[in-house]
Image (cartoon, rainbow, N blue to C red):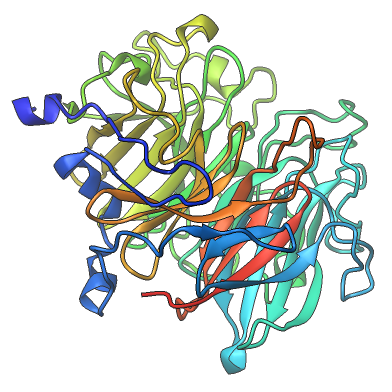
Length: 465
């Protein structure tokens, strides 16, 4: 670890105040560029990596979504409205989402609904697509034409629970993740939950509602697939000690296309020698070689949750709030949103981004958001992340107060791209729903994003660089 790297504690200067939000420089130096591994191709095609944003946000007279001048939005779907399929109403809690290319220039969106037992509007139970009739979560699929007109909207999977995030596969399906460990008999469920399900937005009945049990039963958050060999990396967002683990799933039929993950495989958990808790690592650039992968004793957690299981005398490596996960270049990146010693972590931090290089079996702490960080930028509790057409990133904010979609350029600059205006509080004490599921159309011309509450899906078009 170089002395320069050890000094890279994230600091930011606040300039994104109010609707006139402009730009903030982020002093992540070389470490920040790590977040954009694998995006150089987009820049070489003409992406403007030096962008400092698209200007101040303009208040929306309709009170839905503030955007920079020249951009516009279309509401594709709103909670409570009828589904185009006639199967019921648009469910609550729009969360993780991905876009896929369809025929004739169409776009398909597959959208999670993070519904618990008390959700206001469940994902309608549909024959052949329902796992547990008492589960209120699931996914819906939208089909759009080239102008973002909604051609269809239907249930893609139902009867699941707390479908938070997930990830897309190289064979163009969506893996939706249940962020719960509830068993049959809990909260009225008739089946065990805590699984990953594969969803084909083009033909949901092809994938049905089959839990991929070999991939583990735990509080799943997100996944990323190594496109070279089909290994799936999984994060666990456990809510209490011992905190979650970072997993990899080695499928029996790697990259086999249709149904490959149903053939089973081996689930393993990451062990970093000498590091039982990732929060204890505080220096940006710290690197660990010889990372070990330990077979999970009981992936179905039939008697004990996985994170409590016996991994031998060396133990296993835990981390609080393991959430986002994505593949970039030849590495997988995953995020710990925060750690709090008062809740049982070894140390405090306001966010870490880790990079694991499979070929070198090396884990590196890329970014640390420390106690000197201005938590207003790039937002409080960053959540879903996606690559942007200009080679940077878009990040959804999930915290208190105003909620934004922030852009992050390859130069380490942060800018506000959108701000939610749907007040779910009161005039005296306003509140806004978080953003989730940000993704771009295959041609890069439209950004799609969800508001979690009230569940709303937007299509944003404009002068994207």
